[in-house]
Length: 171
Image (cartoon, rainbow, N blue to C red; front, side, top):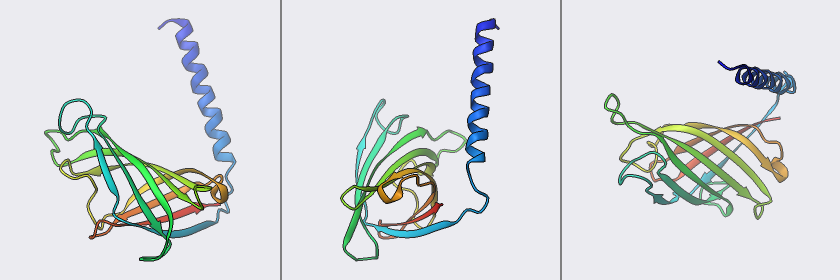
């Protein structure tokens, strides 16, 4: 291995270690949480079929749906996002593929936002994951009253195609 490359890799490893140590040290051991739930209508979905016809790496479903603070209540926000196929079904597991989902939850005329991201398993023949099986994703951040948000989002698809979105924010 050439010496310049070895030094660069060592330097990057040291930088990563410093960032991880700093990030871990910044969190209190006395964390409190805030939880809340929003109800999402069945999303409108659009498939962007990239590459070979049919399921192939990079295919993207774009989606959006209104949000409600209570079932059947007034619209209080919107979710928009995308699901990208990142692992296709294999001969060993033909009924399973993996999609990375990026979701933007907007409230208060988009002043308050929460961004969530995660990977979940899907059936290759369905645009959405199975009903009744929660999928957990990381909360990456937020704006407005959710500035600095972190935690997790548990998404459960309901039998009617709507979703229950349960947020747990760490303070």
